[in-house]
Length: 129
Image (cartoon, rainbow, N blue to C red; front, side, top):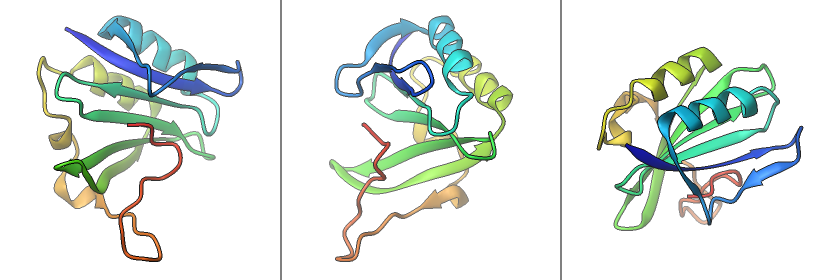
């Protein structure tokens, strides 16, 4: 199955825009993940055929934050997040099943709601979905 993906690699100064993601097989995405997800703030996102996004961002301690934005009727409700190793991220993507619902990958207790001062939800700057 093909997915769409995007990333930014600050070390190599390379970007695939989130507004124009590339279509690729899982093997190509895994290769890009292994190349990109090493430097803090580098990120990569995968879109499935349901337009759900599975995002990865390298943190200062070299762990990788998995982030799954949760939306309902186009409204951002929050995201499920969990910090893991790059190896765990690669395994997660390798085991993705065709037509898998990304919102069920992480447990419900990992849901974080991001709020602004006016109480409306806002996505963090690196989320390009």
